[in-house]
Amino acid sequence: MRYHIVTFGCQMNAADSDWLSRRLDSFGWEKSPERDAEVFIVNTCSVRDKPEQKVYSVLGRLAEHRRANPRAFAAVGGCVAQQIGAGFFKRFPMVRLVFGADGVAQAPEALARLAAEPGLRLSLLDFIEHYPQRERSYPDAPLPAQAYVSIMQGCDNFCAYCIVPYVRGRQKSRPAGDVLAECRELTGRGVKEITLLGQNVNSYGQDRGSVSFAALLREVCAVPGLARVRFVTSHPKDLADEVIAAFGECQNLCPSLHLPMQSGSDAVLRRMGRKYTARDYLGLVDKLRRARADIALSTDVIVGFPGESEEDFLQTLDVVRQAGFDSAFSFMYCDRPGVAAAKLTPKVPEEVKAERLARLHEPVEALAEASLAARVGRRCRVLIEGPSKRAAADEASWRGRDEAGRTVNLDYEGPLDLTGKLVSALVREAKRHSLRGSVEEVHD
Image (cartoon, rainbow, N blue to C red):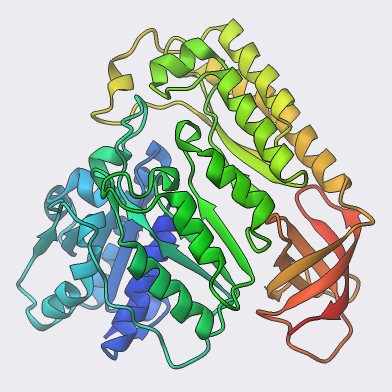
């Protein structure tokens, strides 16, 4: 069977899609372009409304394939699948499988069964109490230099605006031994950088009464041959001092952290149910910078949360400037079905939200440009991802990321294919959202 996967949303969805692809390949199925596929898998996100709407657009487009090949069918997975469930069967006849986050592990076998039984439809939407284990399927071909490793699933925080606990379930931590075994296997197969994934990695182990995230993180960093370690996502209220200390003590723990702030107003943070104050958050920023002076911090900010006043918004602008983020992802609040904030009033008018978002972009962009400009003239280590998208006679020829995750385009005149290699580079220029430099030494 020929299959095609479309992925929306976070790194966890990307990791799920990668695993599904490897597992289907192990069945003898073949990954193909959309136009040639017989089975379509749409892995969805419902954190915001826009990705959800894109799912319906994609399924409408895929219906054309059904007319050309009546045996073609689709599967919908992820958060929107958990949210809408069997409703997809009624709206889109070619959808024959819906599966949530806990159903990913069973999805490949379900797809194989559907391919053999054309009249069948299946749903895998039940939540389970433990972390759903998956077969580790790796191709014979070399693996990419970067890999994701999930350490937990779900969330127990129930922030007022967030749909995640409703569509991914309560927190379930993966056994530490399984996490470490996967990290060792990946490193042994040539992976140089591993990103640990979870909705709130800082609370890892709390549901099992097992090792803490700080302890797991240090064990992963100690895996022989592993050059880089990252993790996402972190809830500020659970960021332990032991994790902060690891940034200064584990040499292969990359100096970058995504720490969602959401608002700089204590009143808004209380209504969001975030369980920290702006002062608490800035205290964490200070501790992180004392542990690792060159750490690059990124964040999420929601504007227009119900009841947000102009003063609340100004406080957010002030905290953004004080924190000095290297980058920030900002969004206008939108109601999601079933969350507590959907009932909160007053709602902020759309035009006010849009205006505040535009005002927020000004300091965010200024901070990002200043961060990149400060790298000019410095040396860094870059893990090459592949040829530069801008490769031309007068442009950089290779693209990768430095230790802090910044995109770096590099000139290189040597004969080697640098994909997957670590190189030393000199940064010569700062672009709007990236750096440009030249390769000085290839390490492997």
